[in-house]
Length: 461
Image (cartoon, rainbow, N blue to C red; front, top):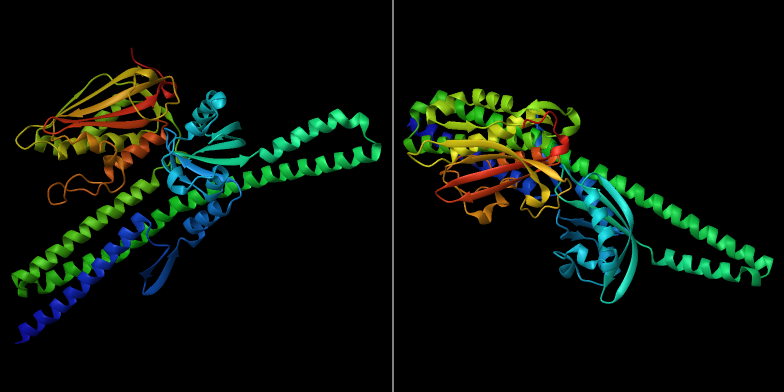
């Protein structure tokens, strides 16, 4: 009878733990997808409120309320986001704007100069004047590009309508032609008016610069929020795991097989969530500003990675073939993680009963030799390739595998959190490069890291 009461009590406690675990799963999913603007976390018995009101919420309100047009475009120039001001400027609906090629909206006479401004944006910021052309309307504008790398993929643009300024310039020209015909009093009045107009334009330009700075600071706060939220979720998970292990240790011998299976599910779910949070923290912590670029021999990096993975290489009979690799001006620690992730990925997705073979090579390529949708900012690149003979993947997933939390297989088939390749992508972007993937089911996968040659020292022949 006592044993039945204990079992009933433990089953109730187990159910409560499962419900709490589901709540934390939903919370992490909401953070990941951006579905919540605030969340509450219990810490030391006290509720703590983490809110996006000061970051993402303010960012959205600020951008949508701006008098200037604000855009977010891909590296190839496709519009991903446009605020209301840009829609009003062109007279287009939001549905029409999204996915539009920005270059196609530029007057053909100004497209070459626009391309130069766009290309320069990949190195930081660029500014200049151009002409928009839509449905026969020519709109003079001032464009300010800001690269969102490495924190985000894409380019941010602020567009200011210069129609009023150009009209003022025309008026000024006209007035100059007529100055000799006007009386002195009228001239002074007109000059005063033009001076005020100039002051307003200068003030307007300062406001644009201030808003740009606000956007940059907001993006930094958004990046840090993921780290803070993930860090604070680690403690309740640790307590749940500790309590589960304590119950199993003290009462496990009295549990039925069904209860033991439930506890096994809890432990497995907690372990996965802890891996997920650890991956989030690792992804959020990648930052080029913390370390300096130094000349680094990639051959030594590969040796260290082999040493770190020695146990799994021996266990799986992995053969790693590495050619002569260049000396790069990089941050070494992230590149150790980069190659560790790529090699571990190749071992994880190897074919059953086929010993994994991984080939690592490097070659110099001109930008016009590289097949990519990305707008290249350098004339030449070093292509470092990691190729395996594993299960491969469908080529239609070549972009998806680099996205955060994306998986091509169920967890019960291949373990993992879907963060490893996203980290690789971020590391390469932080070094002004990019990474591509090619896969063939049943044959293998090939990952190629492209880095600008001008960042490289002491190159081998």
